[in-house]
Length: 604
Image 1 (cartoon, helix red, strand yellow):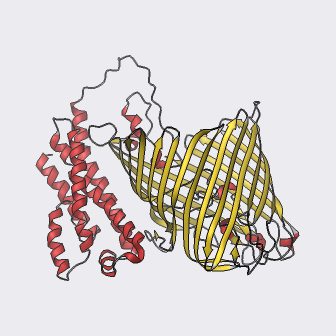
Image 2 (spheres, one colour):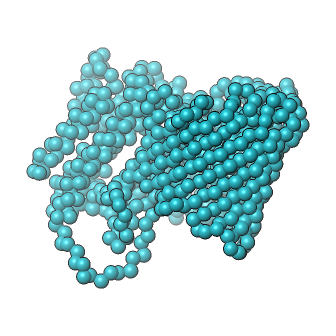
Image 3 (cartoon, helix red, strand yellow):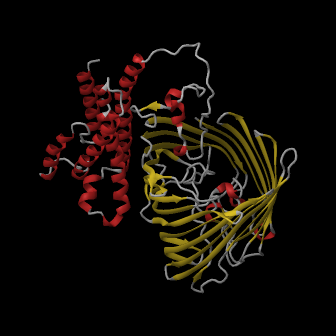
């Protein structure tokens, strides 16, 4: 195709798609927005703020395109330039998402007219972002696809008789955080190839560290739960399937800049009681821009946009991987790493999930979580970390208080290993107020283990946890611990144990019959810290009628779990839990509870 025609086709395609999908916004012929701005000022049309912001986004796109083009083969400069509109449109799509996030984060400080001009409904805003990402991928694919084809045609074919050299490069593995994967290793031809590798490493320009990588996750789980809330209240036996599907695109521009987008669709099938963590139709799970580069003697890292975050064992700050809908945060994240030190700062609004329609999730303007954190390796035989965070929530409700919650969180953790012995100890103290009542709450979590050097590598462990509960009603104090954003995996997937008003002791044994199979057998003993407070399950769900009733003893449960790596990136798991309730629950009409979960998880 003629170079001029190719450039014209790319610009025309991008502008046509963006004008209709982004509700009257030019992304390639950006100067056309002057006419639309004039009409908006005169009272016709909408989105004046969005169109004004298109200009800095366009400038950024041109700068990125220039950077990429300079790294292309000098014989095909025009084909490299075909990515210009794609880069500008991609930057514009992400810029639109960040503006949406910024307006939501501003909350009441956003002028009503500005918010009215920019907002066309939550579903429309989701369509804007999706369209922007689509334009970015299409533009990049069209421009660079032609350039890559030209380069490949000009390269001599490899001779089969060339001696094979030793290859030290290894294929990356699918990680828990997909944005942390580095697929640039596939630039090395000696790395063994697998099907669809052409989608794991799509070169963008002459720099081997500029590429686009696509990924996907799928999790299917069958759950059988015969007595939620121990059968008290409206809970009843239920058998259902929960499904979580994710697709992601990771664009790296040189060694420092990253654009990451992940869509998620979470659905239950056959569930009679659908909760907010069970269902979320197709929506934006993550979309952020990241920058990582040397700074002085260390490394600086910066992320802005919708992202997942977790601390340590995810006792209190997690991505909530156990339930069906993972937890993301609209956040600004920055950290600096120097030798054994790491310093982190974060400003976040947790995402408010809605299950009504696609692309209807929003920043939760009634909930914020922000703070600073440090990490230090090599403190004695272990590592030390700690953080301070401010947690605010409008209209909070506790058994003995209600009102706006302002909670100061102080956390300290020490973890390490000496020979066959390992440990992880974390403590948290909380102050502040709920309404006019003062907060004074705390929690301690610990894991200790000893691994034998013998077949099956048996590890004998014990888990000890405790969290405060309200000791006296109407005393002007709130002592019920708030577990913030806990991980359901920490206790069991059954969700029968919540991290509030708790004493929990759990001995266990873990076995590894092979490198692909892990077995866990455990028994958990559970008490209340205070009988004046309730018994809590996962998500701080109150077991009805338990506050002020019965003794401290809650019950005992048995847990069995097996994880089997069936094939590369395919894991099968089964977990079974039987909870034997104590008299405090049985006297209220509660009964023993059983849970079985069968899971298949695949990552590509």
